[in-house]
Length: 115
Length: 112
Image: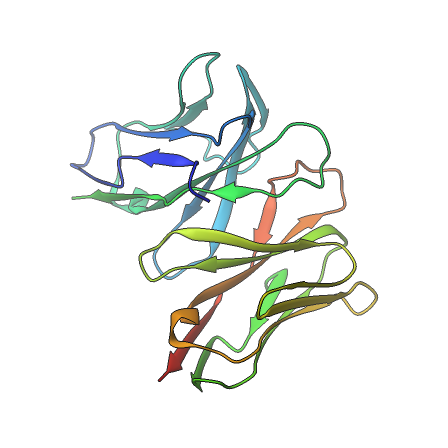
């Protein structure tokens, strides 16, 4: 799993600030997924992106959350006007294009704490 | 009722014991994943399977599609196996590859 790089690993934000979480997929991977793990809860799918396209955002909260995967650079998960309930671990994963049988590789996660 | 249920929630074993973690799901699936979440929080993908059985080292994963059930077995368990094991399924409704439904995890502690 070394290869899916997330940063920062830990981020503290005050209520109302913006949080930006970055994810660089494994080399050769063009599919990126974001998941959220709330305290004491299981992981939940948020969004699936390919380069410059959002493919499936069915798990994204309707407001304040956005994601992008530009042609150059990492994927960004952006949370505007953070609230205490946004405190969670955010995981990024990536996979190769092509067959849906490809394994998904996870990053180490970014822990957001809203104070 | 969650779409993916794991049992047990917590499991304590002695080093060397054979361990089984179970996963039942209520939706049609195209793939099932077993993941390991380390105490530090990082997630490792152990297996992805859609039928039958897979083996990797001391780990074995099986799936019974008809019964909507999967098991993860660890032979000759070791304290370094201590982690949370998570079952996740991809529905067969045509959703994206990464649109997974996760179980809440089984916390395994292996004592020396």
